Image 1 (cartoon, helix red, strand yellow):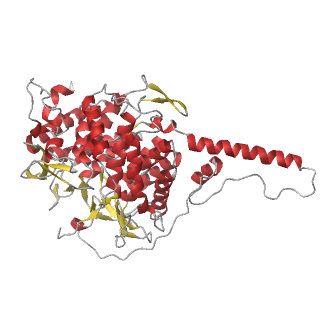
Image 2: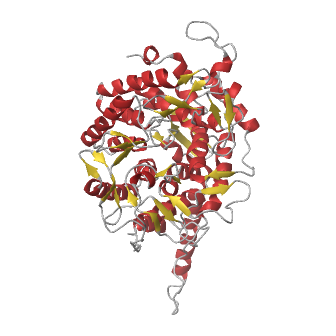
Image 3: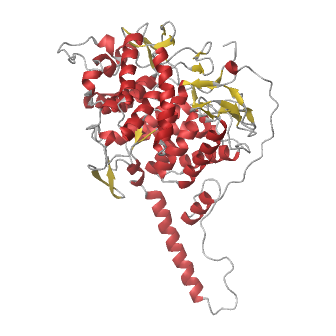
Length: 565
């Protein structure tokens, strides 16, 4: 089923910038004011589709342009990709006095820039000498990531949730951060370390992952929010949804991207506990992290990523059963409400909206690639029809405020273009370069040798920005130079020992060892030993928290919503 016949022009172009006068599908020139983020919202973060203007949401750095950039290339709009790259270089500045979400800035901005950087050559951008180990988008990604590093300077190594891009962490900043806001950095930060040669990014991401692992309960579960100064759990609800979701996702994707068996082993241990305590009839409920007792019998739309994650680890049967449960909710409402009460079979008060989230479509794409089941294409068709019928307005696609009466809200989240449109397109486009099976590739000469790019196996970050895993092997200067020095030093001390072997007093210091501690790199051997060392399980005392109704407990997008919200 050709995608161009299924998805209307408006959804494909969905506010992605168009050239003035670019022809529409019928040969006529569309009105750019109706279809262009650049016309209505730039330089603000996001479009307000009901009033045809823009507003800042996550940091005031033209977020939609960054978040949607790789979508342009995947949809085949090379000329607009090139134009937006120039716009970003000329207009985006991260040296601003703005409080920004550490989590959102990483997944949307750092991830978006890294993906666009690695796709630049495919998009016909004239790359500089040394690419992919250098380039303007890579420098922008590094600059943005460095603005986030002060958040990781805590006693536990787990980051604050918010940082000021100019001044660092504000003195009165809350130390309470959601689990996903701590464990969702390894994909972007490890990629950045590999490309730039600076290990600090991967190091802080790994420390944060390990601190969460060490903080799990005796039954193997993690809660929803934790104090990053004390390591004590503040919200003890355990599940796979909001506030926790992408932590599990990044254990799997980090394991695949880095070929790290330990990260996968950590996820598989979590997966056992999740099955034992939270799964009921292929639904996943929320439970108390220490006891395993059900605390909230709800399904959240953010949980719909889980079948896709199950597909990545090869658990296809369970993935399909859970997906079909979620699909029944979609068919009931024409979208996934933020919260769905499973026993009652209906929405939860004040959580009836659908902000055009991608998670169910994402899972459909993964499952369809694995099975070819046409049911998954039906979901894609239903999604296109629902979004077109309910949310399309004059200047874009509006958040559905209430799925019961289809009232709209004046917001179009950047993830609609970064994820929802992208996953829909990839679901129906089997020949897209993203789906490459290794039959084609590009050989690139870098200052550090030849490397292979574009062979497939792309890892999507949690904002659907594809990372080419082969790129992580293109820029090995720092580690290779260090290893070369270590080999020379070992040879030197070996010769010195041979010369003194007949001396009565032997050398007490032994062979040279590289320095260890903060700011230094251990040797490859020590690094491997450290990664294989079994973490000490930290005992966290039970917290005495007052009982709350389930509508007021959960975290959504890193914020705790109370009944008065």
